[in-house]
Length: 295
Image (cartoon, rainbow, N blue to C red; front, side, top):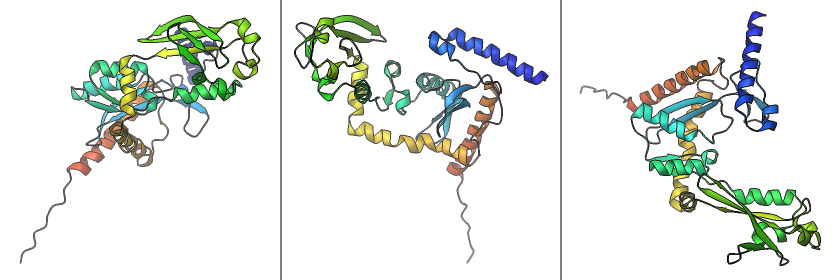
């Protein structure tokens, strides 16, 4: 009973901390904490569903296939994990890599700018925002002839012209991390009297569009990832990055942490990575001795 009370008290403290750092009122209201491991976070699992867990970040050297950095975080996704991973590698090796290959979960504007500032060649696929936008349009009932690409931008007047000839005037500008988002909106009277309203904006009173301007670093990264050379490099990511994870899960059986709490989980993950590196060291350094047979 004493241990259960201590876990519950720890869970309540962790819940208050999560709510205090959360700025979104809706997310603050939905915050949940595990009573068995308060420091764990509810995360989506590979097989589907959600459960308490930790985010283990493993950085692997492509040439020697040994682990050069390891971290355990409470982040539910990898969005902000690349810069801390580089800091761990620099602490371990005394330098940062010239090139980093990551999957799409790490790629966003902030990461691209951070790697460009450090002079690191970043390889990773850009998110397909166009497909997401089209899917959102279809969900709202917008027909293909009124998708964003059907609207013409008039740079001289700084307006968008819809397929039936109505203007969407500039409304506001938002700036974040070097990028700018310009919002354009049609007049209420134009949309309400338009016979195509049911195809263009069936769930809103009037149509709006957003035009984004990317920083030069993001445009260069997008162009680089469209090249064949960058795609060939990215093809090698899975065999380098996923192999240590598969080895640790299959060979060591570490599919679930045996310990609770962030510090203990980090220790357990560190021992697993050290064991993996020892196995790789033996594989790379061991040589079969030649046996000399006398005549």
